[in-house]
Length: 427
Image (cartoon, rainbow, N blue to C red; front, side):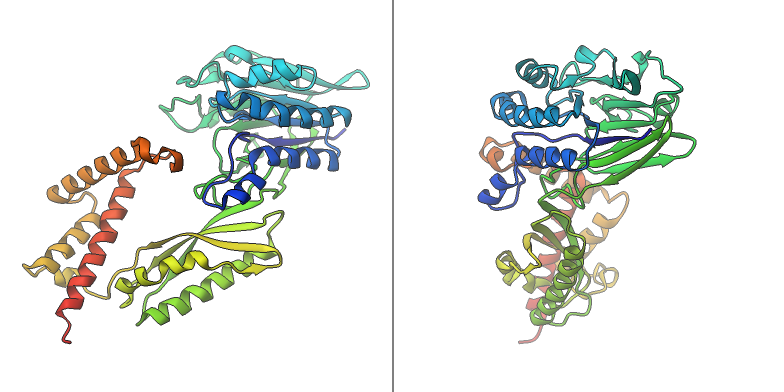
């Protein structure tokens, strides 16, 4: 007997996609995605909807989340679909309150207080699926929840493990678990939450592990196809999984190699050609996507390196549409370099030579002492700026890394070197 499950997690109801126009962000909100998930569950006639935590963004989203959740749960219940969930680190305190408000008969929250719990799905009085779940008891949980996993797995009834956890992340504060721990238990599928990038780990010898990812992509760090997953279980260890591409916004990073571009016009032509190719490819496998938000990374050695800033802001106005899929340029990152031999230039004892040595050191591992100090100071300054309350309304909640500082220094050094070299050219 087969059983169909619609699996998702990290809905973060209360949030909206970032780096798109406000009217689009409201139209494609995470609350609206929940409605699309309910539609898909009914359309595909699933037996169960499983939510792997962070259903609600934060405790202050209680009122915003309760209404949409209840409306969707009512429709699922009317269709005879059971809904199970665990709480994650974001909604450890609010999801239990939401369940109490809408009623546990509509949404079964498993594992309250960090205690493993089992629920059973039956057909004609016979068990067809066991669901084992564990919920975050607080915003952080630095130990593996599997240390307390004592539930029995039935050899004849498939088991779904529902858990919000950080896979292969030793030292994480968000319920770190290792794959061998999960593999020791004879479940059909471990459905995990916390990581927003969809990932399916399949192995004939061990249980499958699925991070369904955030169904609605929310920021440029969540690239690629997003949406809930349709799971069909045909036996205790036999599953099939496919993703439903329901996310209305899709974020991508597009690299354009400008090596050999001799002028700004050449660079522009090459950028437009690459964007057109990418747009056409994306339109062919768009799913439900309506907006493609692209971060354009320009690379390579080009004489137009220093001229890119003169036209990159104009790319923000580039808004083509292919078969209903709109392309927006979220940001342009200039990682190009002037066509110079840095090793040869670094032998000079002037400003260009000093910049060449700095660029070579930034690319070295480890950098020299002076560059390492510069890198630490830049990183500290970027982190301080990121924490400033002034930028809190537009923050992506991602603290700048040491690699971000290195990239920023590299870009500034390249632009300065290009300007200095332009001054050396005969007029």
